Image (cartoon, rainbow over the protein chains, first blue to last red):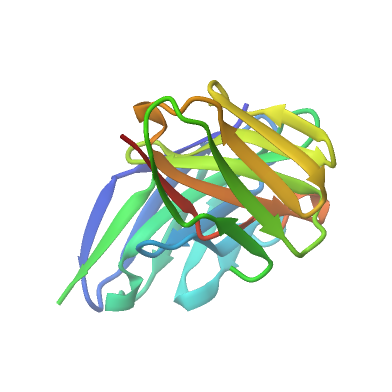
Length: 115
Length: 114
């Protein structure tokens, strides 16, 4: 079975500071991993995905994530935080049910950006 | 989100009443999913569909049923709503390659059971 663990339910950074959101995964097969962002009262938007190609994945809004098999990690980073980055971020791993794929999500990390 | 709409966006209902949430897609995708989102739990899979009339249970399916009579519509029914089903419900679709490109999510339905 696949699972993900997000360390830190709340992260606060200053505007212009590095953003680091942590995600560790567990998977019995080579994983497909995703980061989603959710702005208040909205659905989830795909930020980036890892599908076994390049280990450093670039996404939208300046975010990137690095797949590290030895550490079973897929941490999300952004060099310089902007006020508009304040949102909740979810890490997810793709698994299978037998009849379809499914995404299993972490519990989320709420990012606060302060002046 | 473009291609997937959920209705209603908000609903307040009383304990014990039946409730149906609707997910409609215009992408002709085969796979559709219902998730619920709760603080501290992230998103959890309720039911999913892998084709017309083909559905199966997810990890938190108790108290829920689904139906898919045509490709574009996936209905989630709470047969007798309880307060523990107060949540935000998201529909998602995936294709091609069974989610290798991630899922597309609707804007959600906020359900309150009083």
